[in-house]
Length: 140
Image (cartoon, rainbow, N blue to C red):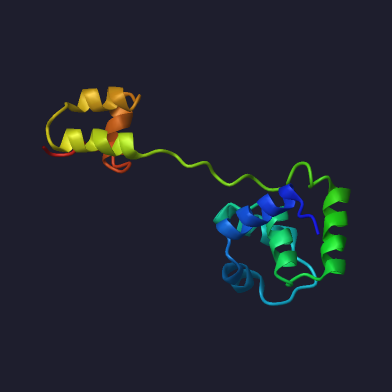
């Protein structure tokens, strides 16, 4: 039996992002259908596509072959196999640089105006951001 490389890669990625125990916890041991809104919520939480969730459920025996095929056909009819209906998993935003700027400010290595410049913010906006939206300048 020849293993389809793309199918194997998708299976590995799905198992890496959402282990079987987590899938069973979220979906239960047996389902006849997975609601698209439910899948969108799981996508936002775990980063696995809604089709990935559907395939993981099938791979783990939560969805039978017939139910999985029914869902695949439904997704195809909706045009969701090419473009999923819910927003993508949010991209990670690097925070290390910002953290280092605030540390330099706290350690008096740079002035507030330099910190604002480094973070590409106007000084009043930076002050509000620095003080967690509390507009008042911090006492130093």
